[in-house]
Length: 200
Image (tube, rainbow, N blue to C red; front, side, top):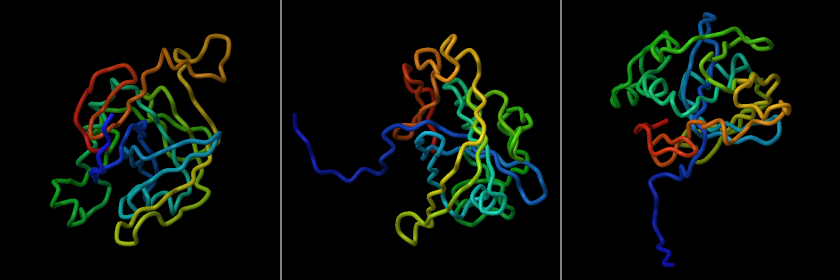
């Protein structure tokens, strides 16, 4: 076995895609895909760009829903890729082809459904919907990258019954559910070939 010293473009070895729903200043919903998230018990750490609308909303409202799509929702996630809730569109995003989209749920062809303990809506089509509150926001990485690590605490979990272990509803059946995984620029299910190219 030979190992080479290299400088990879990214270290996205494989993490679940999350559709984060937040509330804008006017009470409308924002929906954004991301893939830098990890969980420990009922807490989650999110890695995001501080320049985006999602982080603005999280700082202000301190609430969100972490919606985890299955692999077959890759198309919906792709429909959000070049959209932003910021108006006007920041110059760096405009240069990359982003457009302002006030109706993110409509653009993704997804359905909002009311949450129970937080303001932002859940995504009806996602098998896992985690209502959460924000505990802290930390600067992350180099200052010029403007990245933040956001601690979210889950306050309510909605799990589609079909992916739960029968008779043991505190466990998700990993053989039944195939979450959408982002790995090195492509979407995967846990046991599928790449489904689409993306930049979540």
